[in-house]
Length: 546
Figure 1 (tube, rainbow, N blue to C red):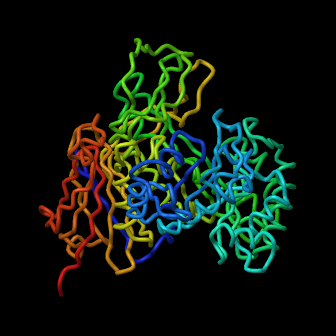
Figure 2 (figure 1 turned 90 degrees about the vertical axis):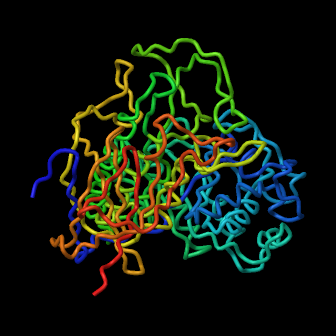
Figure 3 (figure 1 turned 45 degrees about the horizontal axis):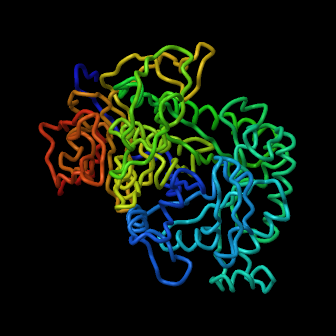
């Protein structure tokens, strides 16, 4: 059956599940000393909005904590990111006023260390999140003692310090990163693949001697993948549970104007890269004799908002966006140097793009090396899900996507196919630049409708549908198990994005411009669901009464 025009046929097979989505794909990311992630975001001593009771949560922003708790977050990665490479965890424990202040070498600032290991772990506990600590992989003994400090139940000098610092019982941190982007010369401790493989093996071996239950994330790579990944799997693969993959998209609307179509299409590039790395890791794991390949941790990913480097530096605006500044004409000539604007608010385009990436992650559950953890950059501020300013905190556009998918999609992946309208486009290959100073692209077919079908633990079928079209409603016909008659025609409908203008953002003064609308139970019109343009919708299908 072929469907033409602005209508799509979605066929779903509920009888042969394709895999299981791990809850950890709804994880998050925080980086110390990074554009308000921690200080001025999670932690803001002296703010009237912060906790003032004695204890490890003293100084934590209560409004930010409430919004994060509402998300139902998965594992939260900290203290970085690039910050990790020069970080020593012992700088951030003990009485706050006695902790050293250090020059911060990743982002050029200063790290007060007033928010450290115990504060982060207490904050995760209060938020209902699982902590994911990342070590630099530069000093085995330092890594081992960090695991001992956080996880050991034995009476040692370090566990005694932990008790004196406010936590008698072990924190039981499950997830540990063994380095961050060690392949990059921007990291302190940059090494070759062979050098990293040897270091990762030694770190992993001795960290596991302290706590055999921990799960370890090794450093994967987004380029030159075989050269890096083969020695890492050969030397350390048997000790690693995951390999990381970092992917970034490029948005230019601050500089070139409306680039909605270019942003939302990049989800296809992300899916291609996920599948390619999964296949490579699977093949290499078999070649080097591993019993199984490690899973993938997409533990850094996002859409970057770019702008010309010669513009005035962006600063945070009190309303949740960028403070006003005088901007020259940008132009769009090749070779223009650009930077990331970390204070730019999230848009409808970001929302639709992120939904496409979430669908790619869901579909990866069918792969031998699936994405079993994902952590978008960032959770708080710096283009994050939660935006904090001195006057309050708000849910950004993409916050609502994570809340919708975390709470209203299932975890069992159902096979689905879409026959519907599409366009051919030159899709940006993330934030990769060519020698001519332009973002690299590749021609791809971009479907307007993207579907992730799942079954929830209560047995209901949940159909998440993205309409990527910028301005047209698209009609969607669902057929389950080959029978239109057996397909429920009634659903609980929740949708986000379609009622907002493409340029809309949330601000402290207008916090729900982009938000999930619960439309209640709705009957399909002749078996057709109408999906608004630039929208993300979750249909919870209601079985017919027998």
